[in-house]
Figure 1: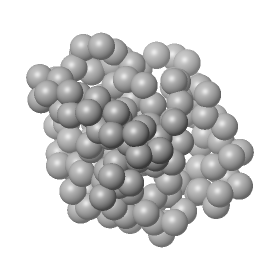
Figure 2: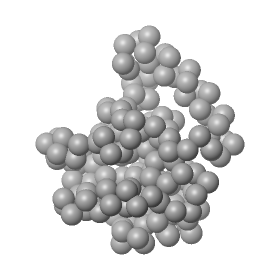
Figure 3: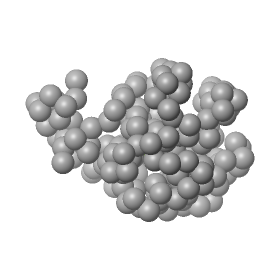
Amino acid sequence: MYSLLCPNLIYNSLHDLEYNHLKSRGIKGIIFDLDNTIIPWDSQEMSPEIIAWLNTLLAEGFKICFLSNNMGKRVKSIATIFNAPFVSRAYKPAKKGFRQAIATMELSPNQVAVIGDQLFTDILGGNRLGLVTIWVKPLSAKEFIGTKITRRLEKLAVGLLKTKGLLK
Ligand SMILES: [Mg+2]
């Protein structure tokens, strides 16, 4: 059970991610969380560096899909920049949204990675479907009130994973 909360890879920043490593693991598509993963929760604009980084992934041949619990309008405005598919109001960690995201990329679960800032939504959901799960530090300290509550549980979970030797 605990292992379902355990990410396969952990990075301080998206920019630390080596996409060649993902390629070597057979990853062809990446599901992206939106809020605090590629855009600060309280912001409407992505940084030019992250836009450039995502465009590099696309140029390298990766498919991408945005998967967010947030509302359609916000998710669509980001997805449109990259002409990429999206799933909004996804109720992560529910499997349904992840399955939809995988289907839009026309890939199978073992070809897909998910990148997100929350263990209880992005990582748990991705692990339930056997995706490569990548945990990144949140972009902003400001968060949705519900997220602030789950962050406390996340801290407890991280402590537990560490004592069980599942997380370094
Ligand atoms: Mg997030």
